[in-house]
Image 1 (tube, rainbow over the protein chains, first blue to last red):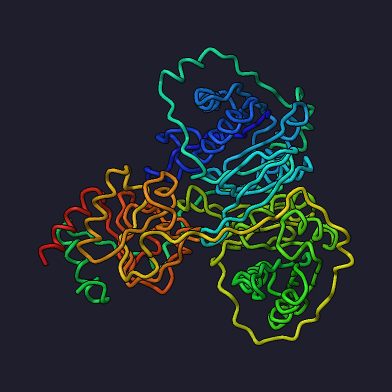
Image 2 (tube, rainbow over the protein chains, first blue to last red):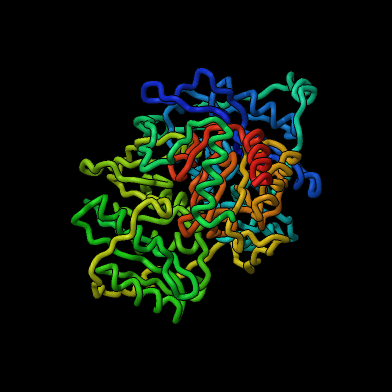
Length: 261
Length: 322
């Protein structure tokens, strides 16, 4: 099976205290890496081709800096990386990104297209849009995939309360992969070095026949104007004592709530 | 202002809580609006939901069909595209169904799409200025949406307070025949109900709940030791389950368990909305996190900026000495 996985390079913000800088967040000290859910999508694709045969291609819409995440996923085992890059793509909204990917997909042949469940903006939108543009079936929040006879898959989606919704879906289709579906393999420096010299083809708007007015800031109906720090609401009472004092305070409050005898 | 529609999700004949939250969001977009509810489904269950929703919406559109008995986003999308007037604003809950339906619906309606909206800032003509959150809720964003050809907007569950208004007697309009024949490349087979685990976290008064901040499987023990000392159970947020450090049955959140403890110790948990959706019953929430900007501090009662790997063992010592 020929599988395309759409990935994104994002700032790692899980351990960092974010600050604002103008209309943006301050990105100077942030470390960028692969969007974590995309690793699960690539791992799932690799496990499918290990059983069913075929190849995994990873693609991203971005710039030269984004090559590093393609190489990381190639070190995991993706055979090919593809960089889709053009100044005309800057400022694209989710629909713009989906439009760009659609043009790439239509010029190639993939039976299955995977994305991570969501990226740094928490939008969870590109996969569903891409599917609708291609008139492929789509499923989000996928937690298992089994290849069936007859050009179809059996999939589970994560629904409320940890329940799983099981469906059959025809190929070709687009799936957004939920985290936890598998255990993404480790990538070491050696693995990265082994793929360092593989050429990553780049495609621009004219290569893909993309109307420049339909993508980028020109085609965007949705635009983030600025970031701001959320209003704290009532917010937590922050304890500023020593650790020992803070622990005593927590124990006292727990007793008052009947949570500790 | 464009006509506003709210897509009502339901289960076992009961409308989801989001039904009234979407009405509240619609009024924020246009205080003069009388949003129309759209309900899809089949037979008696569909009728029950429509009847219940009529007291909250002045107009209810019903789309019935045997293949809509179980909600399939592709079929619902096709039905909505056929019945919605051009330029409509459609509100959906940002849950597992809205995530499945919303993006493709926007494409097929040729409308703008804004996911996971938590607030409406202001409306200027056909331009909607809304509020979202990014980076796991660490920062908020103002987002401008050109609604001139309509918009599909998913609304974060719980972000808009359900309106308490006098009941109305809404008009029911059957749009089933307008939806026409529907087919999908995805076919529902069954729902597998979550397994209960070794420990039932929904039954405990005190939870020591751990998140990404626990850093390593080998550190789970320090949470278990504190839980033992407190007579509590260890629960967790999604990253701990994703890493296979604890079973799914220990996960608190919209895709895990809903818990109602007296005390919830959120240890190294950032506090995504999906996680917070699983905490009910107003427990005392104590958040311990290294990052002073962690969203959990916005909802916790007590916050402590500290490293849980040092804090928890010290607290265990202290509790044992009581």
